[in-house]
Each structure stands twice: as C-alpha cells, then as structure tokens.
Image (cartoon, rainbow, N blue to C red):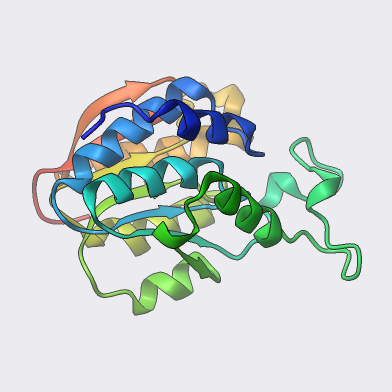
Length: 216
C-alpha cells in the first residue's frame, strides 16, 4: 500500500478545481491510507469540486473500503458572489446559484474514480443526524463559521472509531485569519481538550488527530 499517490492520481488532484495545496494533499493521502487499514469507510465533509476527494477515493480503493463525501454543493460563505473565493464557473446559469456537483462529477470521472466514491448531497448536520456506522477517517473541510465548523465536528467526530483519524483543514491560529481559519482552529483546540483525540501531525493548515479515548 502506497503512502504517496501514483503520479496520475497526483496529476488529477493538481488539475482539479479547489484550494488544497499539494503538500497538505500528500499529508491527507498518507493519513487516509493509514486509516484505511482499519477496514472502515473514509469520509470528508466539504466536497466542493472534488480536489481532495480524489485522494480520499484513491486511498479507499487501495484499502478496499468506501469513500464518502458530504456537501450541499451550494458553496460555503466565502465562495458566494462578491467574496474572495467565488468562482463564476461554479454558478448554475439557470438558477443563479452555485452548484459544484457537476464539476465534482467531472473531476471524479476524469480521475477514473467514480466507482469508489459515494456522494452524499445535503447539509452536513442533516446527514450526520442519520449516520450510524463507525468511520476510520473523518476529514472536516466544510464551512468556516463557528456554527458550521462546530456542527461538522459534533456531527461527525463521534463516529471516528478507536484508533481512527480525524483531519481538520484550514487551521489558522493567527487571529488575523478570523474569516478563513479561526473556527477550524477552535474546533481543533476543542478536540485536543476533549481528551478523546491526540495530535499525530501538522502540515501547514492541516491537522491530523487520532482517536485515543472516548468522548467529544
């Protein structure tokens, strides 16, 4: 089992629309591969156009487990028109609303990974409320408000199995990054303070934690 993706998978990741840098992507992939050894599904919150999903799906394929990705595909706050991370290509011309689902499907198809991903289309708290199975890996990369980041943590972290990994993206400790990364940072601090999770690695804004005890 590879700790780094094959060149064609990495190329597909780099070609996909999204925001995750290569260094963080490689760290995410290595963590997903490790977590896959538990034989449980790997799940991410925050699909966007499927950039990181490529890595999760390939790690899941290697491990023989399922990959799941959760998103309503209407974009988070900072991706709406008039905001810094808005991309006009993601707007449905008929509705005038963001819709990243078609781009996500094209991303997976081009990477040859459609058969290895289950897309859960809806709001994270609603899906988490009906989810009951243990997970080997949870990657939180959704909205950046306290409301959304906290809901993603409270909804999905309880499903991380003993020894499983919790990944949190856009962890920025500097208060000047309030809009982009302070809410994930506060979730990260909460996870550590809970006693349920122990930090494994930090790569730029990506934190990997392992469930080492009960609780949230």
